[in-house]
Length: 305
Image (cartoon, rainbow, N blue to C red; front, side):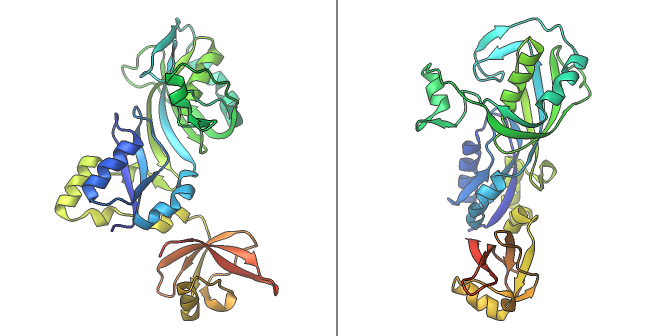
């Protein structure tokens, strides 16, 4: 079984679930997940978790994302992207200057109303299922953080009313909803015309493979060269290394104190750290907790061995 991280350049038309199902068949491995859903219209970076790396899904999915998005002004749809049913079409009388002027209003910590066509649940039911039945739900805004929202130079042959944006944002941000809100703020409506994820946490689209490239690597026997170690998900955490006594305690699921470390130090109470064995193999994510007798120790939070 393969363990680690595979970066996929997801094609248009695939759901994230479709992409994972395709990889399960190609790799002949059931234990595969992903970190951060992409809509069928969207392309770009999908962080695929293999084997034990699926245990890092919450951490990986919660990391900051970066997108290149195309906003289409003058069109409103029920899905808030160009794949949906048209709700309204209006003439676009504003230009780049007006759009640029409102971008600061959608930057920083803001509240965003999620799309009805989303996988969020209300009373145990998916919103998209309710939307397909015509059930109206009053949705409240959810806190998100947009760290960067910038207008890109116009591409050649860009249709009138289309504008390209770069968005850096937190987990839970819907770019479709952002396009909707920008259009509403300009008075003409808007929706998302295209989306490409270019970064997720410390992972870049530049290092991703297409499904065709993965198939070729499998055929050539070189896929292992493209699988990244699981600890890359946690590269912002401090690291400690165990000595041989620590290795023994790790094998029994016990906590570690300073005497069991050969490198690094126990972090402050509540903080997380990467834990490596004496041979340098990533074993777990640990958390510093107090001992009854005083002092701190590292307890296993997520085991990867």
